[in-house]
Amino acid sequence: MNIASIIPVRLAAKRFPNKPFAQIQGLPMFHYVYNRVIKSYPNTFLATCDEEIEIYCHQHNLQFIHTNPEHRSGTDRIGEVISKIESKENFNKVINIQGDMPFISTDHIKLLSKKIDYFEMSTLCCPFVDEIEYQDINKVKLLLKEKDNNFIAENFFRKSVQASKMNLNTFHHVGLYGYQISFLKDFLKMPISKREKNEKLEQLRIKNLNRIGVSLIKENILGVDTKEDLIKVNQILKK
Image (cartoon, rainbow, N blue to C red; front, side):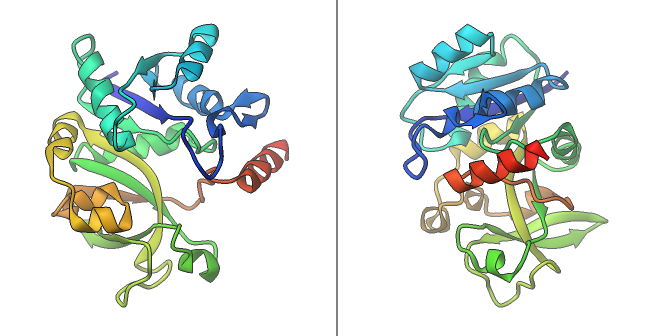
Protein backbone atom coordinates (compact mmCIF):
# COMPACT_ATOMS: atom_id res chain seq x y z
CA MET A 1 0.00 0.00 0.00
CA ASN A 2 1.23 3.51 -0.74
CA ILE A 3 -0.34 4.99 2.41
CA ALA A 4 1.53 5.57 5.67
CA SER A 5 -0.67 6.05 8.76
CA ILE A 6 1.09 7.87 11.57
CA ILE A 7 -0.11 8.37 15.13
CA PRO A 8 1.82 11.06 17.06
CA VAL A 9 1.90 10.27 20.79
CA ARG A 10 3.35 12.34 23.64
CA LEU A 11 3.12 12.17 27.41
CA ALA A 12 3.39 15.94 27.89
CA ALA A 13 -0.35 16.74 28.02
CA LYS A 14 -1.00 19.29 30.79
CA ARG A 15 -4.78 18.97 31.07
CA PHE A 16 -4.69 15.17 31.29
CA PRO A 17 -1.32 13.90 32.60
CA ASN A 18 -0.16 10.53 31.24
CA LYS A 19 -3.15 10.54 28.87
CA PRO A 20 -1.70 8.07 26.29
CA PHE A 21 -1.70 5.36 28.99
CA ALA A 22 -5.31 6.02 30.01
CA GLN A 23 -7.09 2.67 29.73
CA ILE A 24 -9.68 1.91 27.06
CA GLN A 25 -11.02 -1.65 27.30
CA GLY A 26 -7.87 -2.78 29.07
CA LEU A 27 -5.38 -1.15 26.71
CA PRO A 28 -3.52 2.17 26.77
CA MET A 29 -5.41 4.60 24.55
CA PHE A 30 -2.67 4.83 21.88
CA HIS A 31 -2.51 1.01 21.65
CA TYR A 32 -6.30 0.81 21.27
CA VAL A 33 -6.22 3.36 18.41
CA TYR A 34 -3.23 1.60 16.80
CA ASN A 35 -5.13 -1.71 16.80
CA ARG A 36 -8.12 -0.11 15.06
CA VAL A 37 -5.93 1.17 12.24
CA ILE A 38 -3.26 -1.45 11.63
CA LYS A 39 -5.73 -4.23 10.77
CA SER A 40 -6.39 -2.54 7.43
CA TYR A 41 -3.31 -0.32 7.10
CA PRO A 42 -0.15 -2.33 7.84
CA ASN A 43 2.13 0.69 7.35
CA THR A 44 0.98 2.24 10.61
CA PHE A 45 3.54 3.79 12.95
CA LEU A 46 3.44 5.48 16.34
CA ALA A 47 5.59 8.63 16.40
CA THR A 48 6.94 9.37 19.86
CA CYS A 49 9.79 10.98 21.73
CA ASP A 50 8.98 9.36 25.08
CA GLU A 51 11.08 6.44 26.33
CA GLU A 52 8.19 5.02 28.36
CA ILE A 53 6.05 4.69 25.23
CA GLU A 54 8.94 3.22 23.24
CA ILE A 55 9.56 0.57 25.93
CA TYR A 56 5.87 -0.35 25.79
CA CYS A 57 6.02 -0.60 21.99
CA HIS A 58 9.01 -2.95 22.18
CA GLN A 59 7.20 -5.13 24.73
CA HIS A 60 4.02 -5.36 22.63
CA ASN A 61 5.57 -5.42 19.15
CA LEU A 62 4.06 -2.12 17.98
CA GLN A 63 5.69 -0.29 15.07
CA PHE A 64 7.09 3.06 16.16
CA ILE A 65 9.59 5.71 15.13
CA HIS A 66 11.58 7.76 17.62
CA THR A 67 11.21 11.51 17.00
CA ASN A 68 12.83 14.70 18.21
CA PRO A 69 11.25 16.00 21.46
CA GLU A 70 11.65 19.61 20.28
CA HIS A 71 9.02 19.47 17.52
CA ARG A 72 6.47 22.28 17.71
CA SER A 73 3.60 20.16 16.42
CA GLY A 74 2.36 16.69 15.53
CA THR A 75 2.77 17.55 11.84
CA ASP A 76 6.47 18.28 12.33
CA ARG A 77 6.73 14.92 14.09
CA ILE A 78 5.05 13.23 11.12
CA GLY A 79 7.44 14.95 8.74
CA GLU A 80 10.40 13.43 10.59
CA VAL A 81 8.82 9.96 10.45
CA ILE A 82 8.31 10.23 6.70
CA SER A 83 11.93 11.29 6.21
CA LYS A 84 13.02 8.14 8.08
CA ILE A 85 10.76 5.59 6.36
CA GLU A 86 10.39 6.85 2.80
CA SER A 87 13.70 5.32 1.72
CA LYS A 88 12.31 1.88 2.61
CA GLU A 89 8.80 2.28 1.18
CA ASN A 90 7.40 4.19 -1.78
CA PHE A 91 4.70 6.21 0.00
CA ASN A 92 2.84 9.02 -1.72
CA LYS A 93 0.15 9.58 0.92
CA VAL A 94 0.26 10.00 4.67
CA ILE A 95 -2.64 10.01 7.14
CA ASN A 96 -2.25 11.89 10.44
CA ILE A 97 -4.26 10.03 13.09
CA GLN A 98 -4.83 11.42 16.56
CA GLY A 99 -3.93 8.96 19.32
CA ASP A 100 -6.81 10.19 21.46
CA MET A 101 -9.61 9.36 19.01
CA PRO A 102 -10.65 5.79 19.88
CA PHE A 103 -13.60 5.76 17.46
CA ILE A 104 -11.44 6.23 14.36
CA SER A 105 -12.40 3.68 11.70
CA THR A 106 -10.98 2.45 8.42
CA ASP A 107 -13.89 4.22 6.69
CA HIS A 108 -12.62 7.55 7.98
CA ILE A 109 -9.14 6.80 6.68
CA LYS A 110 -10.57 5.81 3.29
CA LEU A 111 -12.35 9.16 3.04
CA LEU A 112 -9.15 11.04 3.85
CA SER A 113 -7.17 8.96 1.37
CA LYS A 114 -9.72 9.30 -1.44
CA LYS A 115 -9.77 13.10 -1.13
CA ILE A 116 -6.02 13.38 -1.60
CA ASP A 117 -6.36 11.80 -5.03
CA TYR A 118 -7.79 15.22 -5.99
CA PHE A 119 -6.54 17.61 -3.30
CA GLU A 120 -3.14 18.16 -1.71
CA MET A 121 -4.57 17.81 1.79
CA SER A 122 -7.78 16.42 3.27
CA THR A 123 -9.71 16.48 6.52
CA LEU A 124 -13.09 15.60 8.05
CA CYS A 125 -15.94 17.45 9.72
CA CYS A 126 -19.24 16.48 11.35
CA PRO A 127 -22.38 18.26 12.61
CA PHE A 128 -22.35 20.01 15.98
CA VAL A 129 -24.38 18.27 18.66
CA ASP A 130 -25.99 21.50 19.87
CA GLU A 131 -25.56 25.26 20.24
CA ILE A 132 -23.49 24.86 23.41
CA GLU A 133 -20.90 22.78 21.56
CA TYR A 134 -20.98 25.23 18.64
CA GLN A 135 -20.16 28.19 20.92
CA ASP A 136 -17.34 26.33 22.71
CA ILE A 137 -14.04 27.91 21.61
CA ASN A 138 -12.29 24.57 22.19
CA LYS A 139 -14.36 23.08 19.35
CA VAL A 140 -12.83 24.12 16.04
CA LYS A 141 -15.24 25.27 13.34
CA LEU A 142 -14.83 24.55 9.64
CA LEU A 143 -16.60 26.80 7.12
CA LEU A 144 -17.41 24.66 4.08
CA LYS A 145 -17.65 25.68 0.47
CA GLU A 146 -18.88 23.50 -2.39
CA LYS A 147 -16.96 23.49 -5.65
CA ASP A 148 -17.35 21.08 -8.58
CA ASN A 149 -19.41 18.68 -6.45
CA ASN A 150 -16.72 18.61 -3.76
CA PHE A 151 -16.54 20.19 -0.32
CA ILE A 152 -13.47 22.33 0.30
CA ALA A 153 -12.33 24.36 3.29
CA GLU A 154 -13.06 28.07 3.22
CA ASN A 155 -12.05 28.92 6.78
CA PHE A 156 -11.20 27.50 10.21
CA PHE A 157 -11.90 29.37 13.44
CA ARG A 158 -12.76 28.96 17.13
CA LYS A 159 -15.22 31.81 17.70
CA SER A 160 -18.21 31.88 15.36
CA VAL A 161 -18.04 34.51 12.61
CA GLN A 162 -20.83 36.41 10.90
CA ALA A 163 -20.97 34.22 7.79
CA SER A 164 -21.16 30.97 9.76
CA LYS A 165 -24.40 29.04 10.22
CA MET A 166 -24.27 25.97 12.46
CA ASN A 167 -24.67 22.69 10.56
CA LEU A 168 -25.56 24.53 7.35
CA ASN A 169 -22.22 25.87 6.16
CA THR A 170 -20.21 25.50 9.39
CA PHE A 171 -19.38 22.16 10.99
CA HIS A 172 -17.29 20.68 13.78
CA HIS A 173 -13.77 20.10 12.46
CA VAL A 174 -12.40 16.63 13.15
CA GLY A 175 -8.62 16.95 13.55
CA LEU A 176 -7.57 14.13 11.23
CA TYR A 177 -5.59 14.90 8.07
CA GLY A 178 -4.45 13.31 4.87
CA TYR A 179 -1.53 14.71 2.88
CA GLN A 180 0.12 14.10 -0.42
CA ILE A 181 3.71 13.48 0.70
CA SER A 182 5.06 16.17 -1.63
CA PHE A 183 2.64 18.73 -0.17
CA LEU A 184 3.45 17.75 3.42
CA LYS A 185 7.11 18.56 2.76
CA ASP A 186 6.13 21.95 1.32
CA PHE A 187 3.77 22.61 4.23
CA LEU A 188 6.53 22.08 6.80
CA LYS A 189 8.65 24.73 5.04
CA MET A 190 5.88 27.36 5.12
CA PRO A 191 6.28 30.22 7.61
CA ILE A 192 3.94 30.19 10.59
CA SER A 193 1.17 32.73 10.02
CA LYS A 194 -0.15 35.26 12.53
CA ARG A 195 -3.57 33.59 12.57
CA GLU A 196 -2.01 30.18 13.17
CA LYS A 197 -0.26 31.58 16.26
CA ASN A 198 -3.37 33.34 17.55
CA GLU A 199 -5.83 30.49 16.99
CA LYS A 200 -3.34 27.64 17.50
CA LEU A 201 -4.53 25.98 14.28
CA GLU A 202 -1.75 24.65 12.04
CA GLN A 203 -3.92 24.48 8.93
CA LEU A 204 -4.11 28.30 8.87
CA ARG A 205 -0.50 28.26 7.71
CA ILE A 206 -1.90 27.55 4.24
CA LYS A 207 -2.85 30.77 2.46
CA ASN A 208 -5.12 29.06 -0.07
CA LEU A 209 -7.39 26.80 1.99
CA ASN A 210 -9.03 25.56 -1.25
CA ARG A 211 -6.18 23.07 -1.34
CA ILE A 212 -7.90 21.17 1.50
CA GLY A 213 -10.63 18.73 0.45
CA VAL A 214 -13.23 17.99 3.12
CA SER A 215 -15.49 14.99 3.79
CA LEU A 216 -18.62 15.61 5.85
CA ILE A 217 -19.46 12.62 8.04
CA LYS A 218 -22.64 12.02 10.07
CA GLU A 219 -21.09 10.70 13.27
CA ASN A 220 -19.18 12.71 15.85
CA ILE A 221 -15.77 11.08 16.41
CA LEU A 222 -15.46 11.63 20.15
CA GLY A 223 -11.93 12.51 21.22
CA VAL A 224 -10.50 12.15 24.73
CA ASP A 225 -9.39 15.53 26.07
CA THR A 226 -10.36 15.04 29.72
CA LYS A 227 -10.90 12.28 32.27
CA GLU A 228 -14.64 12.86 31.86
CA ASP A 229 -14.29 12.10 28.13
CA LEU A 230 -12.47 8.87 28.99
CA ILE A 231 -15.34 7.76 31.24
CA LYS A 232 -17.84 8.56 28.47
CA VAL A 233 -15.84 6.60 25.86
CA ASN A 234 -15.63 3.50 28.05
CA GLN A 235 -19.34 3.70 28.81
CA ILE A 236 -20.16 3.84 25.09
CA LEU A 237 -17.88 0.90 24.33
CA LYS A 238 -19.46 -1.21 27.08
CA LYS A 239 -22.84 -0.74 25.42
